[in-house]
Length: 374
Ligand code: FES
Ligand SMILES: [Fe+2]
Image (tube, rainbow, N blue to C red; front, side, top):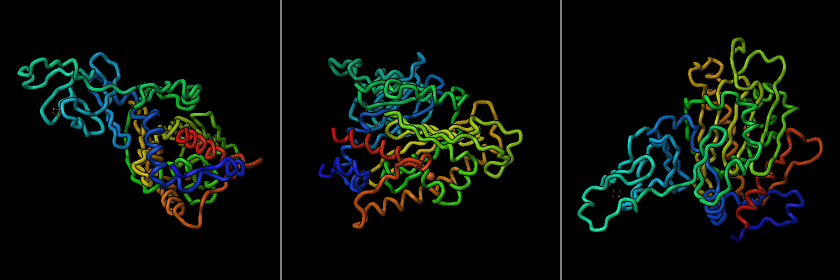
């Protein structure tokens, strides 16, 4: 990797050099050292409620299949047939009693064991037990399901001590959530450009009318961004005297939090809730190339509780107004990073910046740099 971020640049408050956001050799190191070694949020436990429920999740060219087995355990496997390497399931989610390869019909139980393989009785010494699906690490943390391609990775709980308590404090119905909508949005920007945008409040005042609406819904002066090594929170306390949100009166509405709650987990997952909305969002910044990403927005409501007008308005506002306002910035930021007139940025970090400080951006850059430099 020829790109460098020097100690003197870092000491001078200069940010991760622009080439880190488009150089293919940097991206290749991120692929192997970040994305193949870290935890990926793939589902809520309730997405895998019954035996036979499954989800698939792609980590660049790798695909992982996560199932609820007959015995009730959640299991994860590389999504590939052990006969000749056919991808097993393309659907993002579904329900199946067993996993049958579409090529030659090898059939695997939900626990990954090969159960049927046509005509193999004619093959001397064929031993089904030698051809189980290859397992992938899977853990449930704070009611969400995470997978990791690295068999030696530390657990999510060890990576993010204290995070589950923070999540539960702000999202009281965490265990009762059910997916109501999932949207994948391709964005021509490096995944880190998107993450940077989400972890600073400096742009809230300046970047467009929808951000100003968000600022009015919270006590923006009290917006607090905290780094805890491999996770970070950015939380806006409630604003007093709010009567409407997203164009809908608050009267009779229920919500998860009256503030703006976000927690980011290394490297690319965010769990959040908007003020007064009875929905929990997941936001996953999946890289698809050095200068492209696929943003996955998941919306989870409380099972059995009908969506209020306010919650519906919030989801629409996020999908059609706030999200696009940020995505326009992501795209123009990516274009600018390619300019011959730009080499690296300057962090806005200093006394008194508080809610507008970019210390989480620096923290995130340091984590990325450490991961790919080691
Ligand atoms: S590749 Fe799956 S059964 Fe042949
Ligand atoms: Fe934003």
